[in-house]
Image (cartoon, rainbow, N blue to C red; front, side, top):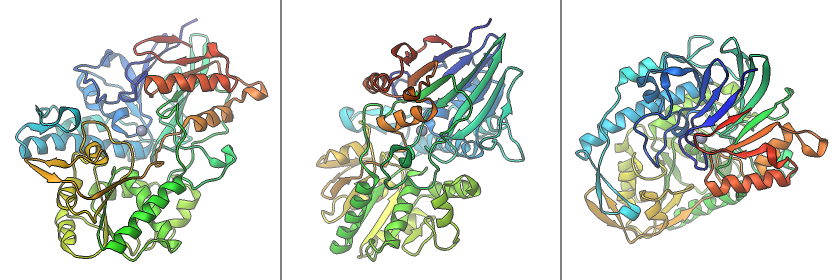
Length: 492
Ligand SMILES: [Zn+2]
C-alpha cells in the first residue's frame, strides 16, 4: 500500500508563505503557492516540474503570490480554484508586476524603510516578470465554462486517483475549503483543508452577533466522513472583539469628524476590507446612525473587486443578497458613498472645508492612494486616522498607530498631529473558539466522533501550540493533533 504524505514548506509555525504538498505514491499536488514576506526565498523549496496540479484556496498573496515563480521554475500542470479566486489571483499578479515598474520609476530603485530600520534605503526589487508571464499562468486555470475557475460544490476529478470539491471558507470572496478524496494504491482517504478559514456561524456558537458582511459563513455539516483536516491558526490563541464594538468605533469617528468639520481617513485593503467598510457605513446609514457627510472611496482596485463579487452574486450570503437586490441603493452604491475613479478627484475633495470620510488602500499605508492622502491630512489635529487592523512593523501604519511625531513621505517629514484610532475585530480569520466550533461541526468528540489527524499551520509558533492545547482540551486525542513543522513529511 502506498503512503500518502503531507508537507508544509512555508506557513509552518508562521503565517506567510503557504505551500502544502500532498504526495501520493504516484503524484504530487500542491495546495497554494504563497509568498513569504519575512524571509524571501530565491527558489521554491521543491521541484516545480514534479507538481502534477496546483490547487488554490483563495487569492491572498500569502497563498498565491509565488505563482509566477512556480511557472518559471517549470510547473506545467493545471490550476484549480473557484471563479472568484482565479479573477482575484489575476488582479494580484497584475498589481504585483506593475507596482515593481512603478516604484522603480518613481523612487529610482530605492525604498525608504519605516519602523526599526527607519532611515535606511534599500534597493527596490527588480522586475522579474512580465504581462506575458501572467497570461501564460492564467491559461493554466481549469475552467468549467469560458472563464477560469470552477464553481463551489462541484466535484472535479483531477487525476485517476484524486477528486476535489470546493466548499465555502467564508474568508474572502472565492475562498474555499477543499475536500480531497484520494484513492491510491489500495488506500483511500478524505482530507479537508480549512485555511484560511473565516468567522464561524454565530448560530453554531450559540451567541448571535453582527455577521461579517458579503461572504457566507464557512460551510459546515459535511456529510462525507472526513479523515484528516488541515486548519489555520492565525488567531489560534485569541478571541476576537465583537463586530458591534468595531462598528461603534466607526460610528463615533464619523460623528466626531462631522462635529469638528474635519476629515476621517480610513486606510484599508482593497480586497474585502474596503467592501466590509462600505457595508458597515451602509448599515449605519440605514439605522440613522451616520452623520450627514460624504464618504469618498478612492480605490479603483476595490471597485474592480466589486465587479468580481457581484459577478458571482450567487455566492453571497442571504443578507447580502437582500441588500444587493436594489442596483442603486446597496452597500456598494448609496447616497453617502462616492467612488472616485481618479486620485485628482480625491485631492480636490480634500481642499473643501467640510466634514468627509476618505477610504483608500493600502492598509499598511506603504503604497497606493492612501499615501498622498495621509501626507495632506495628518498634520491637522482635527482630522482622524482610523486604522482597520493589524499594522506590521516597518510600515507607515505601524508608525501611525505608535503615534510617532513625524511620518516620512518620500523625501519629507510631516508632523503627525491627527488623532489616530484603531478599529479591531474585523478579521476575516476564525479565532480560537471559532476554529473549535468548526472542528466540532465536522467531528464532535462528545458524540464519539474523531478525526484521524488534525494538522495545524498558518499561525505563529505560540498560536499554533496554544491552539493544539485547546483542541486536545476539546476532546481530540493528543496523538492525532499535530503542529506542522516546516519541511517535515507527515504520513497520513
Ligand atoms: Zn487569506
